[in-house]
Structure formats: C-alpha cells, structure tokens
Length: 57
Image 1 (cartoon, rainbow, N blue to C red):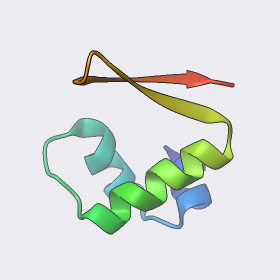
Image 2 (image 1 turned 90 degrees about the vertical axis):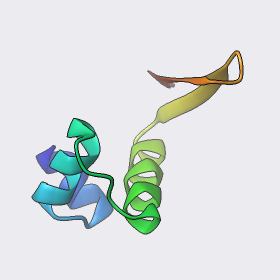
Image 3 (image 1 turned 90 degrees about the horizontal axis):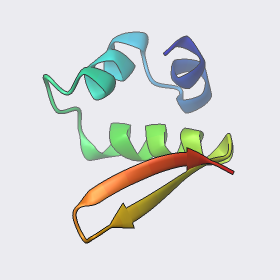
Image 4 (image 1 turned 135 degrees about the vertical axis):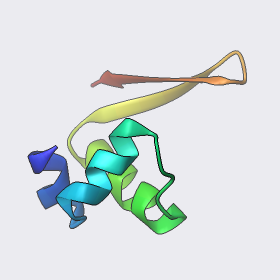
C-alpha cells in the first residue's frame, strides 16, 4: 500500500479505503490509483462483461 500511495500521490488512508472497499473514494482517486498500477506494469481485463482481472505484463 505504501508503494501505491507514493506512486499515485494518494494518502495511505485513501489507498487503504480503495483496497478495503468499505468506503468508496472519489473517481479521481480511483483513476490515480489505476494509472499508477498501469504505469508499474499491471494490466486490467474485463471478463464476461462483469469481472475485472488484474495481472502483470
């Protein structure tokens, strides 16, 4: 979580909320987290129109 927090510029607590799913952070926070993950080589795929799968390139 610390690495994602640094790479995305989000606070550690925001990253915790994103990963925990208990409270939905705003769209800009989600975008910044996904952009940081993609920049580090994580790929996202939509399967059967509903499930999102993450993997590393």
